[in-house]
Amino acid sequence: MRIQWCLSRGAKSIRGVAVPNRRSSSSSSSSVIKQLCSGLQPAIQEINRLLSEPLSAIEAAPFSSRSPESKQFFPGYNQKQVLFRVHLRVCRNKSGRATTFKKRRATPIHQPPDSRRLAVRSTARPQSSLAMGKGSRDDRLSKLPDDILLNIVDRLGILDVARTSVLSKRWRRIPAMLSKIDIAVGSFRLAQDRSNVTSDDVVRASSTTVEATRRMLGNRPPSPYPVHHLSVQLFLGDDSISIGQIVANTMATQNVGSSEFTILTHKDGRKCTYDEVIAYGRQLRSFVDACPVAFGGLTRLKLEHLTLAQSDFPEIFGICKRLEFLHLFNCDVEISSSLQVEHPQLSQLEIINCRFESGVDLKWLPKLALLTFKGWLSQEDPFCVGHAPLLQSVSITNIGLSYHKMLKLSEVLGKATISDLHLNFRCEKIWVKPEGPRQLWQVFRSLKVVTLDNISEECDLTWTLFILQGAPFLKELCIQVWDNVCDMMVDEEERRKHAFSEERKDKGAGWEGLASDFKHHNLAVLRIYGFQAECKFFEFIRSVMEAAVDLQGIYLHNRVLCKRRNLMVPSTSKYPKTYKQKMSVRNKIYEGNCWMVGIHFPG
Image (cartoon, rainbow, N blue to C red; front, side):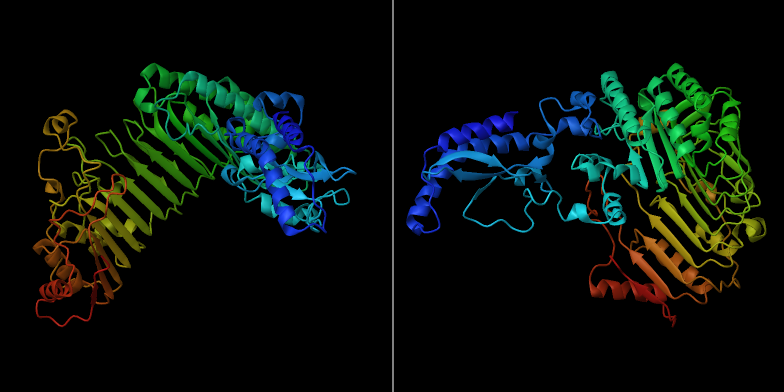
């Protein structure tokens, strides 16, 4: 062992130094201490260097074991070198000379590598009651009841949990009592960025995930402690079947609550060819057919970058009978047709940048409560809601291109009655068609909160009042107006190439406006992000104040900062900053009327 070699070298360097006893003077003691420290310094530096080395083996394999096969994941380390601080003390022989080191029982390392220091203690100092000597084999933490230890370990990540399992025989059985198990593909952060990942990285991460799953689940004995949450992130391929079989065995022998599969592809979607996404789809179908028990017990499933046959999606939905959450990213079917979704338990559905040319038919989803739909290429309606009586929240995001039709919310939402609506226009063409209150009555009759994000600065705002007219019980209306240069395509040639609209962005959102005698009795809050001291904002706010008789507060925020590129609010901003400017804006909005509505400027 490298640390033991350092200890022996330090012992040789101080052998023969006279160690003072308790009756020695302070000056002689300090002199001897300096000699001891000088002799020990090389050994201390070498041990600190060893303890400060990056633990790459642990990061690559989120588990630990005392079995011989685990040595391949910890080359050059033993457990005490990786996981423990070494305590030493200098001992004296009969002649009062320093002779050797005696290594005391090791204690767990809780500090980061930079703060690890070698503790050199003299025998003249009495041992603390917390020290781990021959008479005390466990620390106070290990003496806690199982329930308290389990509560502590449950708050740790999978790497820290694996490390605690090697502290003692008592700690070794703690991971088998965990109620939350989250296994990821490794420390490569492959799920976030696969642009520079090689096939060797994927193979290494997949084998590590298989071994981690086997260590955490395969060796878990039957236990009265249920697994409340089980999450496994894995790459699609041959190793995924091994992981699925281990998870299936766990579901058969353990009480498993929520369980999740996040299935990743080897390549990012931007680099995948058509043949590759079809191959990924076939691999997924083989995975499902090989592990029906595992998929039958899933409550959450995330898929990406694959194309399935037209009949595959319904069959997978039929196998995943407990499924409550489904996330589809950049998915498609082989033949240009619509995706039909029918499931008795599905309560949350996310469809992101998928290419279903004929849209998505949410035919029968009796428990669906939350729907998120982002981006579509279809020239028709991207989706339509059939039987979804519990649907409450709908979020729709899209970049309106020239060929996109104007959506009528009364048609795409069908007979659903929602309470929360979020529309994001991504600073481009308005793709919602204003409708009258009769058409929107079924959809908007229980609507409470509406958020309209990223409306382009060139657009008028009066068209948004159709929501106020169609939602009699609306409580809060939030509007964000700005041109986000981080997301917008500004090059004219590129815009024409990608079919961006060359017309005014709110051309298709024409509306006759509110009736002169229209009154709204429930709107309480109006929020505007990106407010500017301009006429279109003044006119819009006055229209809302005239219609909303019980309006309690108007909150006018400045433009939102772009956190991704740290862009500041431009100097040309017309947002009122001084007290005089704010009073001037209030006066222009009130326009001589005595409205009892507070106007606030949060900034």
